[in-house]
Image (cartoon, rainbow, N blue to C red; front, side):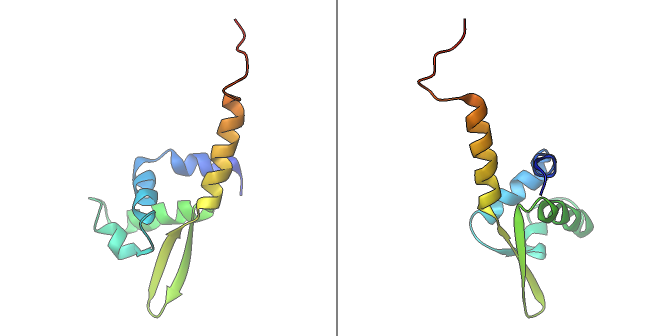
Length: 94
C-alpha cells in the first residue's frame, strides 16, 4: 500500500464519511449506499478505492459482503503526521 493511495482515498468527502460510518461497525454496500445521494455504482467505486488503499476490509457472509474499517492504516498516517508536526516540547525556529 502506498501512502499516495491512502491520501487520495481520504481526499474525497464521501469516502471520509464512509469511514466514519464504518467506525460503528461492519456494513454492507447496500447499507452504506442508503446514506448517500449517489448511485450504487458510485458507492461501489468508493468502496473499491478504500479497499485499494487498505482502509477497509471486506468479508463475505452468505450472499452479503460486509465492509469494515482497517484502523491500522489510519494509525500509520496519524503517526506520520505526528512526526511532521514534531514533539510539543521541541523548540521552534524563529
